[in-house]
Length: 210
Image (tube, rainbow, N blue to C red; front, side, top):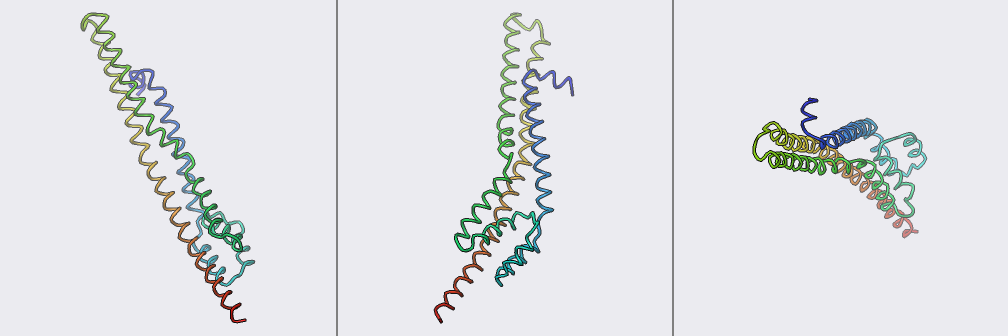
């Protein structure tokens, strides 16, 4: 492996840096999503919606205390702003949650783009080296020098493409997790808004009877 790395030339060092950065981000995001999944409390979400139907504000406050479920945070934001703009409050809270979930995804996206480009750069440098040797010797007097340049070209290309391909899978997976979370937040936020609108309609009908 060491000989393979050295044969790739100087471009292998930035490629190594790209792979380390990508691996670090992948591990961090994997831990984040595992932690997020463990913090989910579907039963509590349903309970909050049910308590809101019965306008039990204090009970909701007690139930959500200490909860780290991102859906609960969005719903609580809407409940706190129920007399002003519930929808916008939840939209803002959901936006913050999505921003937190997308953290470092741009780094993976950059690695997917940069790694193949560095590989191509290594390829060009290797070919230039090979032609330079051919030009100096006037032929193939030093075949090892020529093959070393070709090897450098192939190794960097293969390494860059390998990094990009391997990083692409977790990148797509993390993006799909963000989309799923956004869909869940939207679904429960809509449910809360429907309940709130029913409360408002009932209140108007009661005031009309008076």
